[in-house]
Every structure is written in structure tokens, then in C-alpha cells.
Image 1 (cartoon, rainbow, N blue to C red):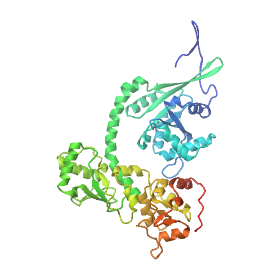
Image 2 (cartoon, one colour):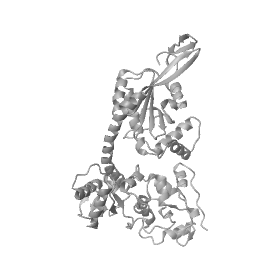
Image 3 (cartoon, rainbow, N blue to C red):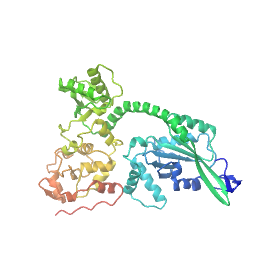
Image 4 (cartoon, rainbow, N blue to C red):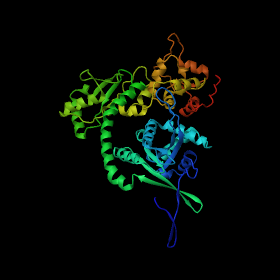
Length: 476
């Protein structure tokens, strides 16, 4: 907005332009607060998550000094990274914004929830962690998507932008990186200061006719790259989470990358040799599948491609092989709770990896929870898994091999029974887990523990959040 006037009939009087520095207005105390109070300047339906965020560290654990001005979340589920400058933007301001976008792209729902809770607390608003989490979920129009969090939108607000910035941002936008430039202007009007925010790039015309086709092309290329990398990533997640033990049986159902006609051809081909439809899992990140048909090892996508070529005679393109393989839940490993194993039914390797995304072999939280389950109470593998962000199967496998887990006998199946695979770390013990639980005060109806004495996942999360430990019950 280059010219602004007050109008009185035929008379138009120019309004003098000013600036934040000239009016002794500061970036953090003033401009930042305007944006927080009126997030509509960042786009439609933006919720401010936090401001002045600096709680990240590098790979060595050394805290980084970078401070993110404002972080928002729009209704589509994308993060909005905001960089503020009260004067003309620095020539490398877009690089700062990209750095922050890269940092926050690693955030998940739990990270954002904690950041939002801390932000509200600093501003005098008390909201528990569950309410903060729900506030974020409710703000997003549709299903929460971790994939969208990895593609933040960036907004740079400044009084002006040098050509180095505008030229770079135009090119970055054409490459599929969303960066908005918003100009903030100040005027003096009859003794008052008026502020205006104008989006100078991209304009609606540029966005519709220039950027959108380019972004579509870029997204198509990115989609193909994602399809080729997801299978590998899924295998790494599953191996890292120890979900499937060596020897787990897998069954094939052709899905991604083939038409229904080709699926019918594959089914007919499998009918000639049923071994073609089965494989055995090994915890090898490179080639985890041993195919029954030939005894050779493959990656999930490599085997899917091999099957496709064997049936059609053509080279496969873009198959995501982890969608082709499901756990055969009819074959339950000896050391796994059957109820927990049954929950794997109906999910392919990709779906299982999605459930476990972010899971690590750090059982500190699990040990904390186990030590907080008092005598006279019990919990389940599934409740523990939900509380620490894992799955019931690796929880059970860890309890069976750890030797240092507190109170492992207080963990039962979802039906309230001692797992058939339960065994004491000390093989010389002759008592049973059920007899010890009864001595501690747990009531049993046959072989099923009293459900009223169960600690459920919300109570376990209470312990993880630093809540008061539960009291032990006196044996009756």
C-alpha cells in the first residue's frame, strides 16, 4: 500500500507513513503480539501453537540457539512457521525460515501438544496436556496427518523485502516450497498509529496460474519418490520396534501398484503353487522376507516386483511392496500374548509401521510405569503400549527378555489373564504369576482378574505426566 489518504468530500489528504523503529515499537514485544492476537494475518484458520520456541537440540544433545518467532497450525493440518522483522528483511531471511521449517518438520503431535501447553502456561492459561492435545486435534479439519506436518508453510513478515529475498522465494515456490511474504506498514492517522498487513507474494493470480501447475508437477515427482522409499522406511520402523519376531508368517495380498485385472492374474498364478502366497519374516532391514516358493530372501518391494514380472512379463514401476504383506495371525509365536497378536489382523506391513512410527527401543518410560503399578492392581500389555507409544506385542516380548522390568507379573492380557507365554526371569521360581497377584490382593474369578483393579491407559499416562503414584491395596 504505497499511498494512503484521509478523504473529506473532494479533498484527499496524504497520510504520513511511519515505521516500527520510528515509533519505538519492537519486534517481540509489539509486532509478535499483534500476530499472536490476530493470527488471521497468517492465513485462514491458523491456531498459534507457540512463540519464541527454542527447545531443540542438535544430534549431540547441545541446545541450539535458534529461536522461532511464531509457530501456528492451520485447519488443513499443516504447520505455519513465522519469521518476523520490524524493518527491511535481511537478505537471508528466507534461509532462516527454511531452517526453522526443517526443525519443526520433525515435530509430532506430542511435541506440539507440550509446546502449546507451555506457551499457554507462560501466558497465564492453565490447560492439562489432554485438553491441549484435543484442542489441536479439533482444530484440524479431518484426520490428523503426520505426513502433512513434514511440509510446513512459511510466512515472513517484514516492513520491506530486498530483491535477493523476493527472487529466491519465487524460485523456492516454483520448486514446491510454500513461502508467503507479508508486508507490514504503519501510518499516523489523526494522532493514532494504524498498522496494515499486505500479502505481497504470492498474489492470488500468481498462485493460481503460475505456482499451482508447477507444484502439482513437483508433488507428482515427490509422490513417486515417497512410494519408492516408504517400503524401506516401513521395514526399518518394524525392525526398530521389534514388532515381529523372526519366523513370523506373512501372507500376500497384491494391493498397491496393480490393477484389479492383474490382481486376478496373480491370484490364479498363486493357485498353481500356494507357496507363492507366503513368506517368513526375519529382522533384516535389507531383505526381511524369505519366500516360501524359492527360499530366497527379498525386500517386500523386491518380492512384489518379482511376482509382478513373473505374472505379467513386464517391469513393475512404483509398487509399494509393504502393502502386499499381512501378518498370518493364525500362527501365534510361542512367546506372544494371543490377544495382542490378534490385533495385528487386517493390517499390512505399511499399516503396522504407521502405527509404530516414532517408536524407539527406549524402555525408560515403560520401566517407570511398571514401577508405578502397585500391589493389588494390574494392567495390560495394550494399556502400557498405548501409554508409551508402542504396541502390545513388543511390550510383551520385552517383558519376557528384559530381566530388569519391575513387577512384570502385574501385566496381564486384555482379557485379564496371565499370558500363556509368561515366565519368570529367574527360572528356579516355582510359584505362578496368578498366585503372587492373589497374595498381593488381586481378586480372580477363575483365571480372570477383577477388572475394577485394572490400571487403564489414562491412569498410566497420569503417572508418566508426573502424577501421584497409586496406593497399593492391602491383601484381603
